[in-house]
Length: 356
Picture 1 (cartoon, helix red, strand yellow):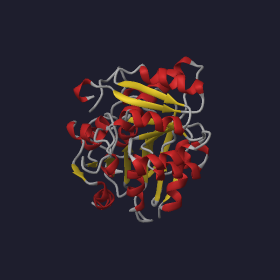
Picture 2 (tube, rainbow, N blue to C red):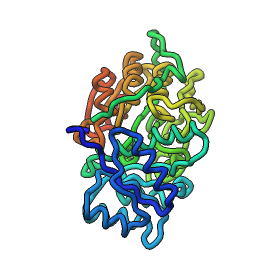
Picture 3 (cartoon, one colour):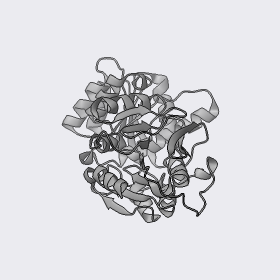
Picture 4 (tube, rainbow, N blue to C red):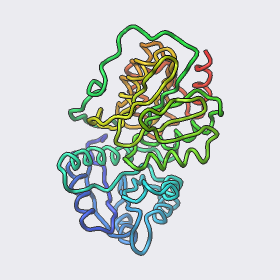
């Protein structure tokens, strides 16, 4: 964080065990400081009056006042970035919609104590989401010191320099993270029913992507669903990569399908944008349009460059419209972004490039 100060986090959850686990996980990151914990929104409000946190983690189900009501009060009175933390949201489309509409920056699953590898992956994901939220520019709804992280090599070999022959069949590949739930919504709402097939990696936990896809399907002209193994990419359809699984593009003749795989965290994420983009570079090449949106970190930067090197057309979200200008900035720095533009222009640009 600029100036060396840690991001101050307030943990709000009615479970004392969850509060302790969350505090321990967050405190393990050198850039985060747990300034306090609270068992309900009233206790949290008292702490906020004493010292303003940089970010709040907030449970959905709590006594005396539920988390969504408290979130709305925070956003209306003194906006602070909030990450909703719950085991309930993923299975409930209505609850997910209310959380996003109320102004939550991101959503995480409650950490589960038990298997060591699971807990460590939870720590990485939770700390990254909280740090990204602390940097979010709320009006538009710092990179961190990297730790050792895998690249897309862990899932798929690098594409050869020989580009796939160009055909009339196009595919749009999209990558997004913090702030991306609204960015993806805006992008898909602008798509007509005859648009090229779209495949999207939005960093979200397992169980949340299905509800996210259902929400988008209910408001967009295009059909939206969570991707499943072997799904065909069809015109007027968008597939959302399932949380906790990598999604890759495959091709047989002129038919694109999705390959959903287990695998390690790649660039600290599963699903990873880099994994998707690398597969698109390999199997679609010049037939593809790559889109990189708001988010912290560098997932997607190298993959978008590989797409561009394979002949794909590429666009990136500009800083002014990004909630967190990390992923688009890194993609630009790596040479993967052909043109940078505001979010509101990206759908039209992707359609235009798809007609060339």
